[in-house]
Image: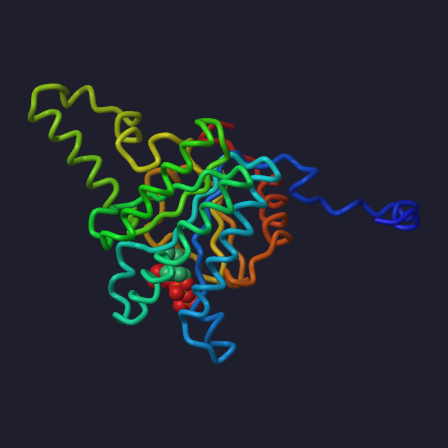
Amino acid sequence: MGIFDRLKGKKPQATGKNMPVPRHIAVIMDGNGRWAKKRGLPRKAGHKVGAETFRTIATYCKDIGVQYFTVYAFSTENWKRPQDEVDALMNLFRTYLREAAETMVARGVAVRVLGDLSVLPEDIRRQIDEVHALADTLGENAATASLCINYGGRDEIKNAVRALAKQVQDGTLKPEDITEDSISQNLYTAHMPDPDLIIRPSGEIRTSNFLLWQSAYSEYYFTDVLWPDFSTQDMDAAIADFNRRSRRFGGV
Ligand code: IPE
Ligand code: IPE
Ligand code: MG
């Protein structure tokens, strides 16, 4: 911003680089299909550009000091889509995951994958193991970008309940010792704080089964921008909006 703007009393626009940032930001990466349709392209072209947006925004979040960045990439319900779209998404994970993780780890971002990975094709699971091994080289304190794949909030809670029920059955846990914390500790996100800010682009105003337990006190931010078009300026706008919220957590 130039000297004349400053003399006119204009405030410099806040960017992620000069304002406080949330510790954990999550994004429902939505709108890839509509982005492609608008351009007369196949839906998978939107997913490809959306994947690049993930890399750009995750790296930007690390650069401005966000410790955890978590995105919804494929839900437990997305298997319902036509087989060719599911195949295109699996192929995208196949060609993109390891390569993206390598470039992001080189920039100091540990990439991790969350969800029920047991039903993913074997070669993708192997790649995910490699991605996690790469993330481990950065140590525990590195900024983390988590991709939720075959993730469903209800499925995650069901799995946590099952794990706790098994401990009760084995006699290692008493029902009265089940706490909110022990449930949290059995979710995929056990190692991270709850998201402070959840962003949903593309104009839809719903959670679509994302981070149901963890979002109890998250701030939501909705925007009409389609995910492939989502820019660092859009992230700055979401963070600036978050910074204007008054979080009370039930207090006064
Ligand atoms: C989000 O984009 C990506 C996935 C759900 C895999 P969509 O594919 O849902 O895009 P729209 O909502 O149809 O535009
Ligand atoms: C949510 O988007 C899932 C992901 C972004 C991965 P959807 O496009 O699947 O959600 P709905 O169907 O509009 O609720
Ligand atoms: Mg969608």
